[in-house]
Image (cartoon, rainbow, N blue to C red; front, side):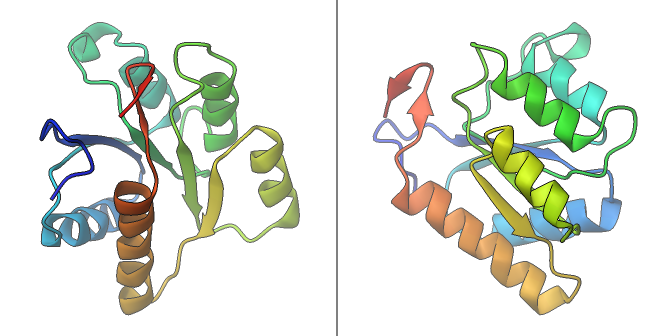
Length: 152
């Protein structure tokens, strides 16, 4: 199943430094029958290099959706989000903030920076699995995503 009429896989960029969360997210996404290609980067600088197609990411596909943790090494998720939403070539990519923080200032700041949604990452395995499935169902089944500047 895919929400692209041409059968192109949906490109997802997962920006997460916790190997356990990466592994679990990947397992949940693989269970579904959608055509997904997930790229993973572990810090904010690497995320921006990927999005800007710099160095080893020169041939990286532009993601249709970014799953962004806030607490990242090198450049935190707030800085990454600000650069994405401030860049006319990247600003239309939906960004889902998926983090353990429940701090009101983090929630407010990410929405001020134009995050598309803010989701508290559950610590419980079953709840985490449920949240990832809900993200997938909503963003890849219900929502119409832009693709290369055009609506699919």
